[in-house]
Length: 276
Image 1 (cartoon, rainbow, N blue to C red):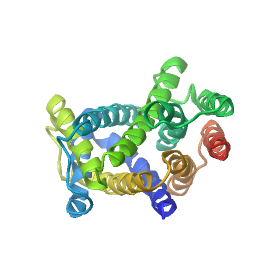
Image 2: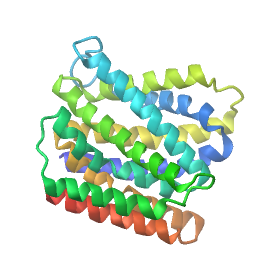
Image 3: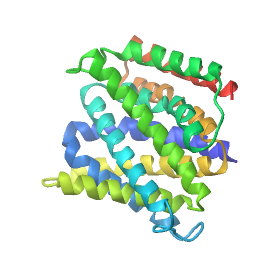
Image 4: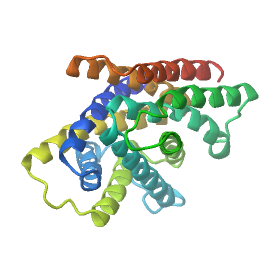
């Protein structure tokens, strides 16, 4: 069943990533991120009564929520920065690499085993995925571009591993998602108050949050039910979906380096999943 949730998450994330470009064209990324996090949580309210009782102050749960929120905030800042300077398809490659990060983090926090073959595949995957994009972001040199991509991948991987750790603590999907979004949203709103937003801006935010909320809720459900690595493997197809959406919407082919990077990501992740 978790395969269906993972597939739905990939599709929802792809549309949410595509609509991120519209947000960055109208609104300062600093002003947009906080409201987007809070809107994400708002879309999850209908599910707040489902699942086990909340454990906000139980054991390591509050610390896991805080780390997940901080990781999500860092990833959101990077993704919005990339989209503002390039395209949604470029930004979608880094999060799609999170299976590699999960593979590295899982042995430390989930007790999973890792082989040398998997290590080699991870290094290969990061190289073939990031290198073609080194000059794809306007205003950033290759070192900063590769650093941004790597940090985004590690951040998404950390959020995935924490979702599984929370599930092991008996935390349900609503708490896992809402707590993370509210904490991250309040931090960004406090640091960068969303002053000056109008109705049209609000529509852009709501449209993007709708798809991202669905993506996060379905992916968290899939992670809780199955393997974090396999779930993230499904999400590796996000760049391809975004490329298809951009091709239809803009009626022009994406840059070749983005196509190569997206395809290499999918191939690399597929090989990685077969090694598990």
